[in-house]
Image (cartoon, rainbow, N blue to C red; front, side, top):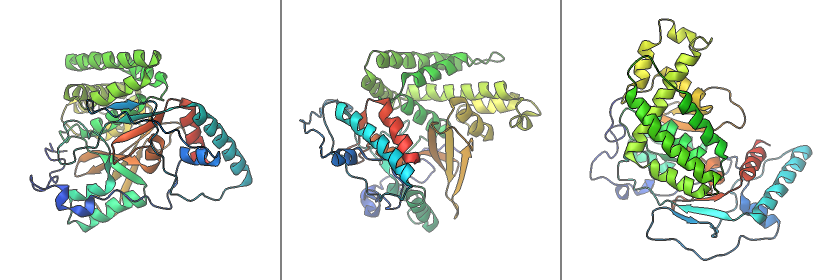
Length: 390
């Protein structure tokens, strides 16, 4: 990976170039009619002949993150057709939908306004908010294969949006760990996931070498994690997520989080070096591989692709699409049904973050306003996952 001061050397192609000069990329993505989808809360309300409550908008111009716990954003009905299903599946699905409706009847939506991303400004960490996938075409506007592959990401792989990851040689680790950190801090997410990450960091220790800088970074990140655990346990889940959003835009925290990602990856290598799938990589020893893993500004190699997801107990799906045929790799290939999936796209040695239509539906993401609508109820999201599997 080369150091990318303009995320791959191609954005913007001219420092004065902007999206206004490429109006074909300004439109919001059209959702493919054949895409699978999670059930939309509005459908449940419609089935019950109910509507979400109308309350006063209390957006504040004084803050970049605004929580509206008593506001309802219009939730549009799903554009996807229902798939045929067996009577048994239909009965099971209806039971789950009924439970979903009951949860919505007693839950108030939490609207979080972050604001749209400044797409002409190169990110210091990651993009502030999700960007419509069509706008990725501005990277190589005259490359026909690239333009076609962006459409394939959108229509065949159901990718809705993306975030840029700063190209300083740390973009793989940044793309994965920042997406994971955002996920475990979501308002509805069980606090046990934050505690699990805390425990992983605390147990990760490299004693053979000078890793003082990494230990300092680890202590700093642990402090923020413990603060968010305390917020969640005191019923202030939304504050914890607001804190997470701000932290991921903070350059110092961003680099500390990346150092932690590299550190726990190296520790995972030492812990599993004798396992059947890892041993062939380290038959000549681990020292060189560990040095590569912990070198800030150096591309994550094959071992990082394998070990970081294993350490975090997630799956990373990598899309490579500069060639005519899009290549997709999964690390690991098989996962538990409830495991979190991070999707990244690689081009010319650089990694950015992808966002699916299902993720968009789950988060009730609004690209126009830069906002999410959450329900602070973990069971609600479990039901969405279960219904989607039917």
